Image (cartoon, rainbow, N blue to C red; front, side):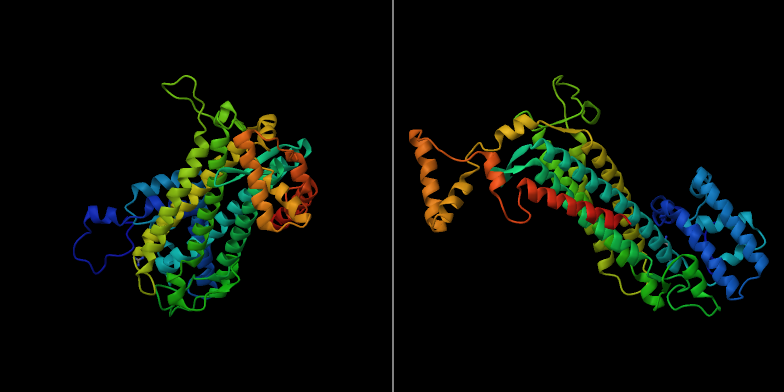
Length: 448
Ligand code: ARG
């Protein structure tokens, strides 16, 4: 049985190499469970519209049920690869026709792969956005919990800007700063999951809708979409949600990458602020002393790689006219690869984080080195009536005198500097405690 879904008007068989070039099977096999759901909903639409009989619908649904089991067991993957199907949709169609020889041919009535791809991709995006949301919330919750621990321990850190020592902060404050972006990422994923399920493209056909009396409401409801889409041409060419999800993934990896970069440096002997467990480190094949933070470096590079793939995904869409063009197959492949790679990298990032230990004494000890409390000294002068410029110049002069003549600096220590901060959102312990509570409720709210 041929897996190709076309060919009647062709005189000659397709060139095998070109058929292979056009195959998206390796990219879209991951969509198989979603296509089965989409196909099941289409059967309902055909049945409710009176296009196929109840018996035919039952036969199709039980064949799809069987395919679903074969997907889980891996048997379908082998079948699909052995078939000459152009994509997962053709492969499922072929398997259904094998399993239900009587009614299998009816499955594709009134649908095109164009509305099928669009619908399947939305179902995939909704599921992956939910998973990504859960994962980012777990990371945010974990960082918040580590922040609580470090708040209790009172660990201090010389915060940097431009990688130069800037001002003393609590390590808990840094950990909360690391958690915040993941809450925003989770919110982005949550919105994408909702957007994905807004409009159901199924029943849009190839571009113009169908002349068969499909019950589009029935299929939209069966798939848990809010409503059928409004315009068939737009529906089959719309990849907004897929691009939004890819963007959310790239953003999240970017957040993980920035934290990874900082931890990579903290793990160097020169910093000595952190240590990655053996379980998360790798050695050198040549230098016996090495302990390398590879997972964090890989997260960092994956982020950069995904930025490139995202540019590719948008680029592949940018020049195509409305409706479906085969370019969208490339868009789909790029987006799936971004999403799957991002989820794997985030899993690894979460795992690597759990293997990071902070060297509290060393870190706290460095917190007021290199004049990090200079701003507090200047602020104190301003509080006594100096202008900002005068205070800045006076403290600068004290540093110069210290460096040139060893003049003594009677400055507050790091702990006093931290406790002296009074603005909302600042690093003093009370403010950090408040921010952690707020973080926790934001996480709990999103997790619902
Ligand atoms: N493999 C194609 C894709 O993934 C399926 C759609 C093909 N549609 C078409 N009209 N040739 O986008």
